[in-house]
Image (cartoon, one colour):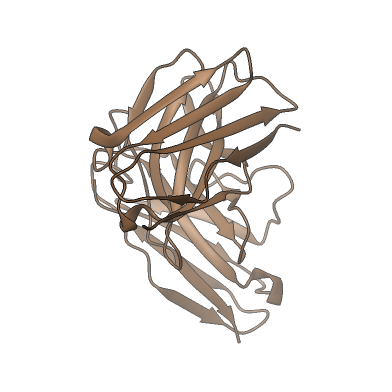
Length: 110
Length: 121
């Protein structure tokens, strides 16, 4: 099972919107809505920000939104803030009890 | 609020077996799914596998031949064993709980802080 494909880095200015893509295959992202996104700050455990492709866990800012089309899921951060600078990972069910992470995307706030 | 705490030897010799424990507090092992995830230094996250409180497991195919996960409901602990380790197994190892509802698990809602493991002679 190969890792999902994410851009290595994405950057934006404060207040802007950025989108991170997560491309899989018809066997994982394309077949299930069980895509979640995690934010990880240096030295910390990841924190969930999106689940089931579009839903936000309680307490997560509505500046984070998710979508999915075909084999690609996307995370959009609106109104970019300095505190959003972190690594972001997508995670998807791939069938038969197997799950797979994306390679991760570093978000820089310019 | 459930809390997870990983523990284990920080240093393991090549070819030996890595053994880690995840202690769960503030909640019960059952009836949940639990997972192990690792992150090599400076790299991304890798799903190692999951275990249901009943003992049902699923492992990453790339690691399957070397992994054993188990659960002890009496002590509220999970364990991970990885055999024949090499330098490539050096990583921070996390345990996490799946948030599940209906017939599916959706995401990891609780994580441990992680424990660093270095494989070196």
